[in-house]
Image 1: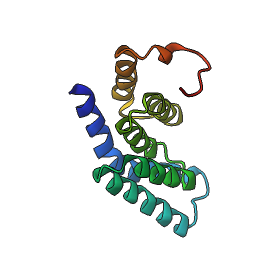
Image 2: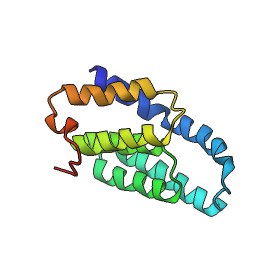
Image 3: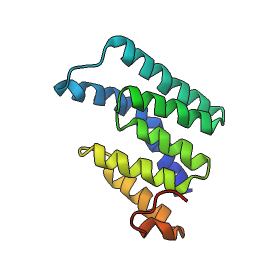
Length: 134
């Protein structure tokens, strides 16, 4: 239950965090507005698909958004969609990439605890180096 609550809190705050991340990306030239709009649309579509229980389609939509604008917060949605599909390795991969790409993550401790919890639940491949996908 605690994992689900943590996951829910991470996923529900992703849109708010995504907005603050957009301002932090001012170091690089901002993407054209049409790209930003398309990324927002894909992200919103991912959220809607996730709520409808269409987790594979949601993952695809989140990945489309991330490909357009690689905002690490989008990876939280990717992780949720993968977890809902039972893709434990993919879930951890998305969460670890999120932490690697967002040094200032305000939820770093919670995300790391989630990764650790998944590992503690009996996922022996978590500590196996260079393991691609199962």
